[in-house]
Amino acid sequence: MRIKIRDAANGDLAQIVEIERLSFDNPWSRDSFLRELSLPFSRTTVAMTTNGANDSILGYLCRWLVADECHVLNVAVRPTARRMGVGMRLMEHAIEEAKRENARFVTLEVRRSNLAARSLYRNLNFEERRLRKNYYGSGDDAIVMELRLDRR
Ligand SMILES: CC(C)(COP(=O)(O)OP(=O)(O)OC[C@H]1O[C@@H](n2cnc3c(N)ncnc32)[C@H](O)[C@@H]1OP(=O)(O)O)[C@@H](O)C(=O)NCCC(=O)NCCS
Image 1 (cartoon, rainbow, N blue to C red):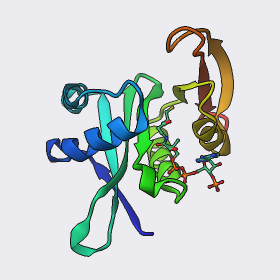
Image 2 (cartoon, rainbow, N blue to C red; image 1 turned 180 degrees about the horizontal axis):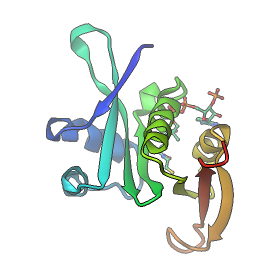
Image 3 (cartoon, rainbow, N blue to C red; image 1 turned 90 degrees about the vertical axis):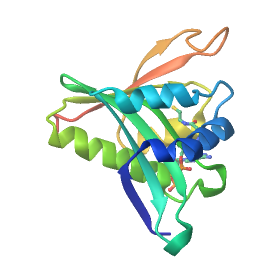
């Protein structure tokens, strides 16, 4: 499948929110994404199919670029498009951008129980740094993961 990555725009929000709702128990609202689109240090990209007229959004990634750090806030792929490399492409795109902008780290939090996402990040050489107990509520821990860019 051919995948194109581009910056998100307000017109993408309906599809982004649809994927968000299909992906998380406590999804971000449309307003949350709208706010991210307006913040100067926040960037949201979408992954699109490039199959003619029926282009649709397959996934998105939202991150903050602040000082020497890129912090990934949100990434999700449409359930019907998973395991086709879309999540990997979105992450690689964000990492390449962070390198270009001289960031030294890419960081994120992931649910301990989210084995798919942890595996994706480990494949990209992220290291599991710290545990945040009950970060997502009782018994639901977060793992802080970090990719050092200045070691390469
Ligand atoms: C996590 C997520 C973004 C991965 O997106 P994806 O497009 O399916 O991932 P890719 O196809 O690029 O997979 C890349 C690698 O990630 C790992 N991976 C992805 N899905 C996996 C799964 N269900 N089980 C185990 N490993 C998985 C594999 O190592 C995979 O490489 P491989 O296919 O060569 O084995 C997607 O599952 C998703 O949207 N989940 C719901 C939202 C979410 O949890 N977001 C992350 C919050 S921190």
